[in-house]
Length: 233
Image 1: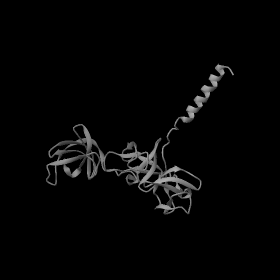
Image 2: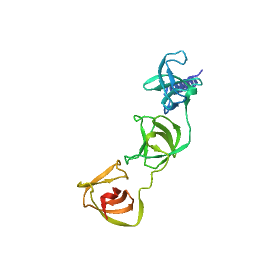
Image 3: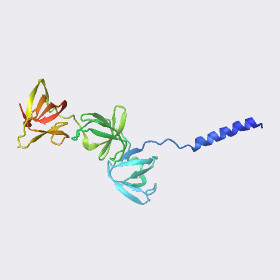
Image 4: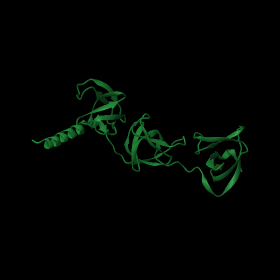
């Protein structure tokens, strides 16, 4: 065998070895939920194996390796095996809506946990498609993005209309019927929503929309909400 041919063969072998040595690209974690009542987490893939814990319907578990009869999983900082037929991998297809009282939207996360990375955030009334329901978290799809949202802040209908637009904006003055010196200017209607700023009584505002309980107003070029009872027309 001549030296040139030997060199080509050696190069191909080394390239193949490097490809085999290269780490595989990491995949996003797969999650499933328990169905059918309390499900045992066992130390090994056997009905005779030691039980490490029991988990109720809706509990989220991380699937390490899915099998036909048994799946290797992680749950509550424990690793073991669960019977695959009692694990739910989706999908329901129902529509729910984001409803928070923070005024900063609802986070879409990579996993069903507050420690999972935030993908993005969606404002109230955003429609989401639920692909898998769970205890405390739902797996959802919004457009082309998929992830997990806290089920606490997902409801079956959009928020009710608190205000109606006025044909012509009208001026008003802040007052405090409770005797206080300031009035809260909020990002959304509701007593528990985020406060943008507290303004002193007597501050002039422009009312854009009016409702029985709340008014949408503009102050210093910014729009938000003030209780109708705290405005003098």
